[in-house]
Image (cartoon, rainbow, N blue to C red; front, side, top):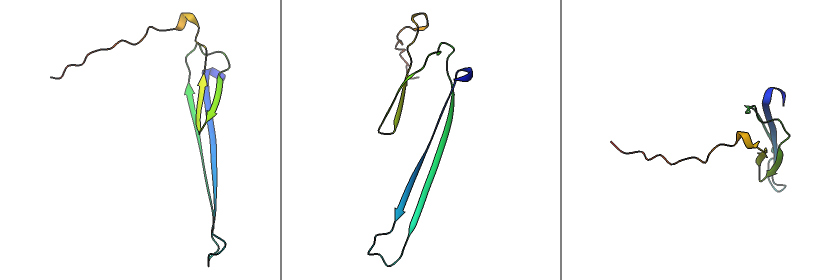
Length: 80
């Protein structure tokens, strides 16, 4: 990942054909694509563990001990 930038891209394609018993012959092709670039923290230096399940891409990195943060704390917000 050059400069700690992760680029994710993909495309999809659908083909529709009219039923054989139809009076008209229709064929449609739908295509789409996407591309995203994400700046990652400087501590990300190793290859991620990646999985794709039902169209959801999951990337996991091991975080070095010295970069781990405390658990988030709950802050009460009062209505005014």
